[in-house]
Image 1 (cartoon, helix red, strand yellow):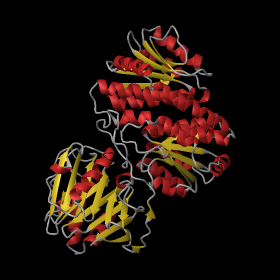
Image 2 (cartoon, rainbow, N blue to C red):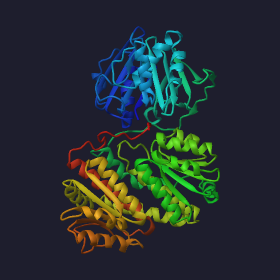
Image 3 (cartoon, rainbow, N blue to C red):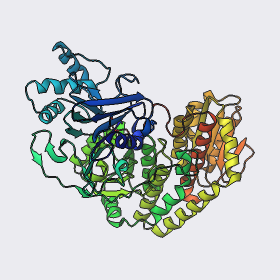
Image 4 (cartoon, helix red, strand yellow):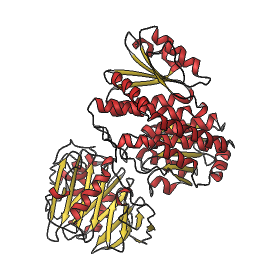
Amino acid sequence: MCGIFGYVGKKDAGRIVVEGLKRLDYRGYDSWGVAVNTQTKISVAKDIGKVDVGTSNLVLPDARIAIGHTRWATHGSVTQNNAHPHFSTDKSFVVAQNGIVENFEELKEQLTKERYVFKTQTDTEVIVRLIEKKLKKIPDLAEAVRLAFLDLTGRNTIIVLHKNGDIIAARNGSPLLVGLNKKTQEIFISSDSLSISGHASEMLVLDNHQMIVCHDQNLSLHDTATGKKLPLNPEKMDIKKQVIDKGEYEHFMLKEIHETPQVLDAIINSPDDFQKFAQAIKRARTVYTVGSGTAGGAAAQIAYYLREIAKVNAISLVGADASDYYQLFSKDDLIIAPSQSGETADVLEVLEVAQKKGMKIASYVNMPGSMMSRISNFAFMSHAGPEICVMSTKIYTSQIAWGYFVASIVANKKAVAVKNLKKVSIEIKKLFEPSSIKHLQKVAKYLSKQKHIFILGKGQNFLIAKEGMIKMIEGSYIHAHAMPAGDLKHYAITLIEKGTPVMAVLSRDNSYNDVLNAIHEVRARGAYVVALSPEENISFDLHIPVPDLGEVSAIYNVVPFQLITYYMSVMLGNNVDKPRNIAKSVTVK
């Protein structure tokens, strides 16, 4: 989850690292820290909260080498003391980590017996003490780091800065890449490519079990298992510098929702060749889709489109709970993973199992150079541009629209899909008109005063109801519960009483009457019904009119949910772009 950034060059390293961390704080913003090297010692500045310090106020000496970290807390409370980087006992080096040391209790117990002193509550400090222990026998820091890294279990990436200016970074699971600018003789080390876009001309993405050593601006790559030196083969970095600002919008979330039509247009105009992928889907015995959180919902919607439109045997999995399917995986199967970051830990674990089983892997990712893309037989990019708000909006819509597009190509209906997605794009633009926004704000005002919200859907709209639930929980901190409309009467109807808010999302398809019946049932028990529907009904207390777009109605219907959540979050005074306790890129299990 956390973000790592390092810099070696001729500029003010501390300020460069802070700017890099600001681009990485979607990965976690509980605390942050920067360590700079002045050739004689290491100076550290760190604080709790997001990286909002102005570079002119950064109290650090001028330096040319630095590392930094933005934290999502896993072990230890959110305090300045627990913020990374962490000093060695003799202040000769510091360590920052992205990941979880799963065996840290065992290691800490052993190290404590050996008289090593711990000053924080973090699992990261175990790595610091392990390196110190290795250094007693091996005076070479890089080798000590490598050996300490081998003692860790779990998905981890670490970065180490020594007072002599050496930087060592190792990867196992959590992302790590090196950006190079030969013209300016700068080196950037980061958790993602977005943070170095526009600064580096070449990029080296480390694979698992690899370690980079930077000494006097000279780089070397090593295998962590053997220490063997590996060839350096950086790739040309085709990512243009991304301008990351809110423009005319108050928040990134609102800006990114408004970018949805362009995202859909990018799918329609995609230069990718889908035919080989479509043939692989047709040949597959079973197509699995996998994701977590919002991307998990997108994966399920993609599976729905493959079943409904392409008549493919498609099964959706949740990354963190897919292990019981491993025994069913076969080389005759194919697995599809939508992801914003391409580095989601529990999804990568599923894909690694699939790879070992000989399955074909496809990914739809928004972050160039990600591990998911690198291990995929079919790697697709969303071309959606950066999504800074931790709550995913345009990327989710892009993922389900892409799934619909793929299913249509498999069914030999590409022309129909293009036509339908163009309609969705046009209709979403109308949703941003003042009269529509005013009505959605009215709905948000009502919902923001509730403690619990039920959301009903069926068919193409059930997973849209579920995504509406996810958004409301993330952004408003209000409990929401989505369920299939037909399942209502089997349990949740016991909770319906006078004034209970119930949302429903309907489309004019074969599920319409079933959802309407569920609305009648809750209304009879006093519920206050808010309905997204192409037409008005006497059972609706609040009606949100949506266009009848046939089989692509769901792609449109998610956007009103996103906007309602946005206005709820604003009205409640919440941090819209950075909701509490969550991070965008979940690179730990």
